[in-house]
Length: 121
Image (cartoon, rainbow, N blue to C red; front, side, top):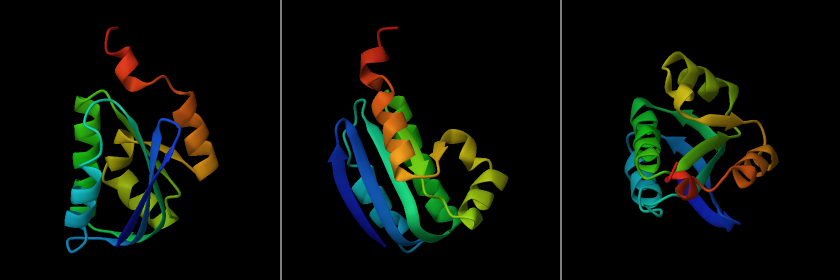
């Protein structure tokens, strides 16, 4: 599993390559859970992920919970049909905004209000 992080405006794009399973989930947790704790927007590009196990799903859920607890947002982009099916059947897809392309996901995330600016409402 490789993870590339880059910034595009106020959005962190995390591009994942490889399998997301029990062996690689700790790397995901280490890299992604260390992202800024308050506010922020994370777009996970999953187009390079061919397989996800329950440990991988748990890692994504941990990221979602951390971001949500700190007024942040997480969205997914580029899910393969197989991974989308797994996430849909298990109910995990309900936690995330899901976009077909990186361009669409980035546009939606950048046009959304900064999560931390909404904390007073």
